[in-house]
Structures are given as structure tokens and as C-alpha cells.
Image (cartoon, rainbow, N blue to C red; front, side):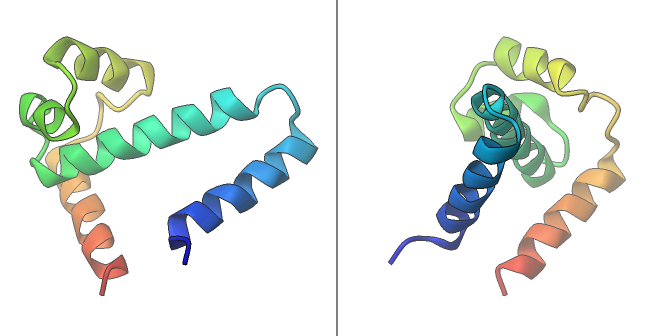
Length: 91
């Protein structure tokens, strides 16, 4: 049985293939990476080094990606909200 997120990704991919040909990989890669980073930051209360460690990426990489994705303005309360949303979805 396929995981729910893979089904959602497949659906989103098919929609974008029809609506935005040539832009699908960039759009979904960006969303995927920013989601990973937001979740890792939420899990660590915003600690970039710990979030990088959780993801298996270096300090410079996560710092650069946080800037690229515009995540540098997120405060600790936002991380807590992300974390609580993540936990409520798994129940």
C-alpha cells in the first residue's frame, strides 16, 4: 500500500504537469525542501544546527536554504504551531 503523502504527491504532480509544464520539478522540489526544513526547525525549536543535523545537511546548507526559501523571519511561536499541527495530523 502506498503512503498517503506519495498519493498526494502523485496527484499534485499530475495537476502541475497539466497546468505548468516545464515548471513542475522546480516547484515541487522547492516545496518539498522547504517543508523538510520547516518541520526540522519546528522539531528543534528553531535551532538551525540541530535541524541540519536531523536532516543530514550541514550548517551552511541549511542557513542558505532558509534564506532562499524566506524562512529566516519565522519566530519560535511559529515553530511551535508547526510542531503542534504536525502532531495533530498523526493522531
